[in-house]
Image 1 (tube, rainbow, N blue to C red):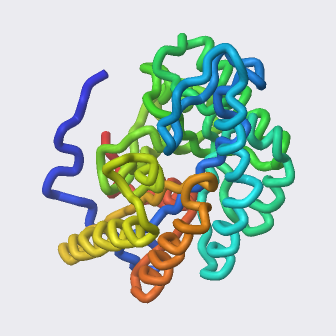
Image 2 (cartoon, one colour; image 1 turned 180 degrees about the vertical axis):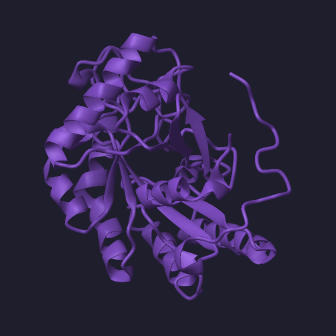
Length: 300
């Protein structure tokens, strides 16, 4: 695959977001609880990535890890919902279809608040080593499951960790998707074209992401998250003075940011950005639709 090291270059699109907003802030809540690797679920191994950096449990269900993931939907998700409700924030819930199958009650909670459900794979696994037909089957299964469960087809996709060489082509060939977030290479979305079909890339971010609470050199206190996100926001907003827009992604996980000692960081950041004018807080599907309607984001 050919790599691009310049992107928009110096000439960013000279078009702002809807209602002349200068910056778009996209909140993404990742729903993976029940879709992580688990011997109890029939997988050959257990998930081992978590903040306590614990020893891998082999050949036996990791009940400690399973309990950590359960916290996300038993407790953490309600704190996120309450804050989004309080400040009228609309978000994209990037959902593993297996997680929704195990917790179908969550679908109504997401949709009645007018949030977006996008696709995060069937299970919370990397697709890097999947063969083309194997990955195609997973994409189709995930799409069909979310459609059946929610009544709404997912139009966005994000794969855990690295994609395969085939992922984007398969999403475009599928025909039901209009964007993916499998990129980390820009502060703006961009539109690609393949076989006369336009497809939006909405870059994601691992720095303005609560996963950094899992790192020894990452966030510790709730204000660490708040301050870093605010500084990122301030810089991006400053850069819009040249007449070009910016976008910021905030990655969230109920089992991480939903902890009582961390949730204030999310609320404080939302309160901060709500004091500014010209800030758009859309679902990712709305970003994608806007980009498709405006040639300024075309990248072909």
